[in-house]
Each structure stands twice: as C-alpha cells, then as structure tokens.
Length: 273
Image (cartoon, rainbow, N blue to C red; front, side):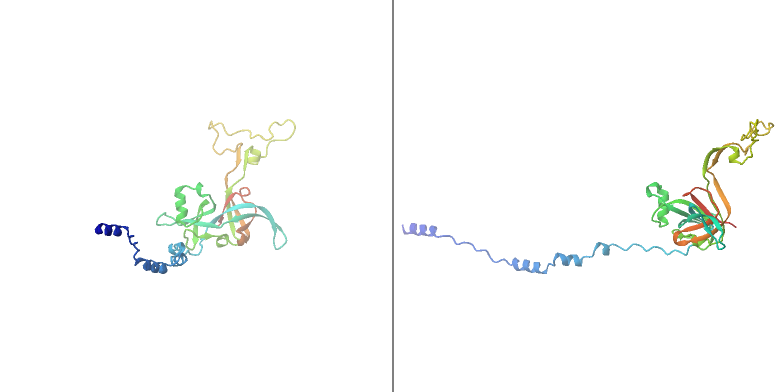
C-alpha cells in the first residue's frame, strides 16, 4: 500500500516547465543589424546609372570648311535695295545653306575629286535604309532632303562638315544660278518663242498661228521645230549674276537680277569662271 501511495503522489506532482535556453544567435543578429548600413547609405555608395555607363565616344575633329564650286539654297523672293549712288537695284533673296558634307569623292576610289553636300531636313521615315546608313556614317543627326556634288577648289573635305555661304562666296563675285523654271502650261508660239505673229488688219486670218511646219522634202517634221507645246518647268541656268550682299547670321544672299524658279524652290548657286 505504501508503494501505491508513493506512486500516486509522484504522479500528481506538476511537471517542471521547460525554460528556453538563452540563444547565442540573438547578439549576433543585433550585431549584424548594427553593422548593416541604411538604404540611403547604400544608394550613396552605389554608383548611379550615369556614372556606371561608359562615356559616349567624343566626336571626331573636323578640318576647316573647304571652298567648293557651289552650294544649295532656296529662293525666297525678289525685292530691291539702293546702292551707294542711290540707284534702285532689283535683287533676289536666296537662303544659301547651311549645307553639310555627306560623302567625299576621291580619285583613288571614284576617279574624281568632289564633295556631296546636302541641304534641308528630311523625315527619317521617308529615307530608305541605305541612305540612313550614309547619313549615320557622316554623323549627321537628321537626313538631308536635297543632295548634289560640287568640285573642291581648296581645302580638305570631310563628312559631317558644315559649309556656309561666307565660306564659299563673297560680295561682288560673279555667279550662275540653276533651277527649275516656273511651269506655264500649254502655250502657243507667240508666247513660247516670241513669234511676231501675222498681220492684225482686217481680212487677215493668221494672227497668232505658226503656219508652215517645214519643207515637204523630208516628209516629216524635223526635230527641234518650234511649235506650240508645254512651256516652262525646265532646268534653266542664268549666268552673269552678281552677289550684292551677304548676311551670314541669317544665311541670306542677295543676288542682282532674277533667278529661275518660284518662291521656295531649290536653286544651285555656283561660281562662274
């Protein structure tokens, strides 16, 4: 019996609550949290995207602009000025340049020495892939609309150069201007070729007619016969013009006289030997 009572008393005693052992990891975690820098410190320590990115390649150094035989421009319109003696002079205002060298022709590769220049901005989506590569190789930001080659008279040409009017021309220089003349539609021989026409008196029936078209021997109309037809809209070159004034800050040139084409048309101004 005594053994049974002793067994019951030992079973009724409460079990000892297990206390958690002190972990050695807590101080280490606290130490790590103290050593971990803040987010601001991390951002300050890490380099920015601009600093981490490599610097863009510097643009190549270009030689001084060369002297070409001509430039591309745009006709603005006609006006008049007064010279030193008070005489009125009719002039044509032309926006000449700035033009940019796109390609350089060399005797070793092309057989002649010239520079291809461009004028006017063109939309990139309207430029085909090969020409986009040409403009990219020349390090030009935008494609150019009008291209033409001119001979290099002096200096060294390199793609990407900017050539202005004052680099090529000077006041008082004799030039020639090429452009597309105004289209005038169908015209007769009196207007087209300045025929005198027939008599204007009573009874005459041939006032503005061209009459005979040539001899009957060949049995055909000879080529080049002046007859009614389409007038204007042709490539015309006007020679013997003079540069009256240059305005470099506005890319403006005043040319004495009239030049082919309407207002806003493209013209090619060249030196005349």
